[in-house]
Structures are given as structure tokens and as C-alpha cells.
Length: 46
Image (cartoon, rainbow, N blue to C red; front, side, top):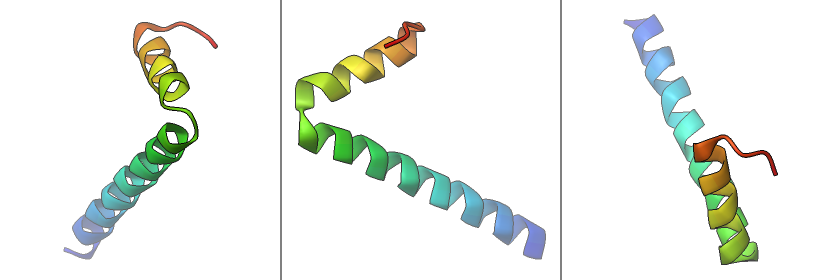
């Protein structure tokens, strides 16, 4: 049970970190952050 709890905690922290990273990019310059997301999705290098 302890290992499962640690695994779920790690996943939760990873999600929070990712959302924080995206929201920071969006606050800086919305158009650039969405371009980065689409480039990453389609395999383009920036």
C-alpha cells in the first residue's frame, strides 16, 4: 500500500508541475506558449 501511495503522489506532483509550467508560459505570452505546445505535439523543434 505504501508503494502505491508513493506512486500516486509522484504522479500528482508531476501533473501539478506540468500545469504550473504551462500556466507560466501562457501568462508571459499566450501566442508563444500555444505555438510551443503544438510544435511539441507535432515533433517540430523550436
